[in-house]
Image (cartoon, rainbow, N blue to C red):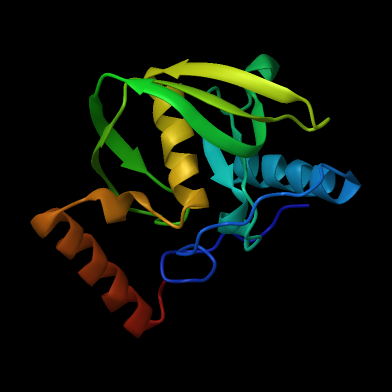
Length: 169
């Protein structure tokens, strides 16, 4: 089932998500919905808070569905290692129409549970590293615009607030 994606300003996007206690059928159904929603958007990643579920879950596919092996599903993920830096343009399904250069680590290692509840450790570089960090931010209530400083952040937030007032957001 495709779920609606929340936008900047809506709860629980700006709150820290809770840990998942048990990877059960309800969580697996949520994962399936998230994958379907991510591909329909289309997007590279989606965190549970973006679909209104305040749990520490994300799905990522940097191939956007072109390679089945690229789909990553993680429950209770954590970054266990990071190094280097990269600055690339970044967008977000919860901030449609906006993007900006965001500083991220160029390599990260994440650990979490897969859909069967087994621990997985994955390494990402480049776009995958960026996606891991972007989705982890969502689980902590942070959007990419929160990582910006100065005029770029102010311009985006002002444009969003204007759209909210106009009823077009």
